[in-house]
Image 1: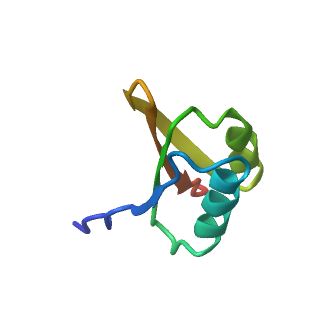
Image 2 (image 1 turned 90 degrees about the vertical axis):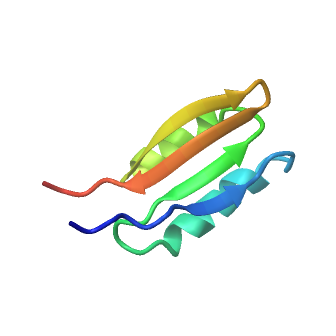
Length: 79
């Protein structure tokens, strides 16, 4: 059984908009198949979610602290 690789990290807490979204989209373009992006942000990135869907990605968002959200992003694989 193959162990999935650790996700790429992007700490965008405190960056002004639209920089977190831009950095996330740039990083996603460089991911290898099966690789994930783990993004940390100071607020939930609602505008990013539609862009992810349009580009074939999905996500799981977890609030880790009052001012820290973890967004795990990966590409949807066709079945």
